[in-house]
Image (cartoon, rainbow, N blue to C red; front, side):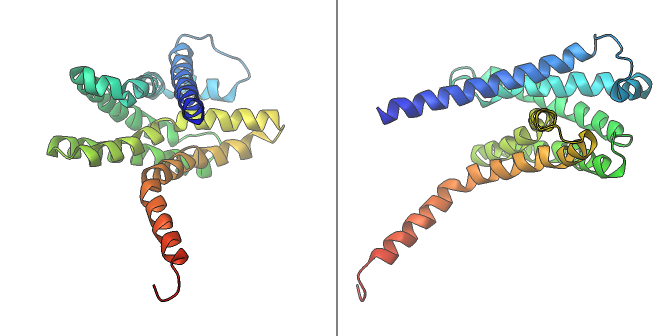
Length: 220
């Protein structure tokens, strides 16, 4: 029974995660074709920004859309060519998304505090991804996966950002402080959770070993 419930919880989490990736990617693509919204400071800024807006929305949306495909163990095992193709498309999308994101970060809403948060994300994103690709080329599959998980944590900062903004609206918090905090926390929280997941087996082993040692009779 517990095993079945665990599987159901896993499927639910994966399904929800996939839907969030598709939804936010779809929003990014749709934004490029949406009508101009008067009174929206973001729309006003994007309207005069230039090439970086369509480049970022399309590339970051594509990277996010590819995340469920790249995480699929079934695709990795059964269709490795599709995994590699998706991987190279993902890398290209990250490169374009990060470069355009760096341009957008310079004039981010909220001034310097949010600008620095988005700048750090735009710098880390391609570096972490490049390290993952270097390990793949070197044949170190385990290290490749660890670093690509970190890259995906940064990519899905787009989801966490919108969830944080939505939470701020629900709780009726002032928008700009929430936006500035989300500019940092959206990717920092993701990275922290990713590191915990990656390190959890080693942590659990150390805790288990410590418990076994503590439970031994004195002098044993």
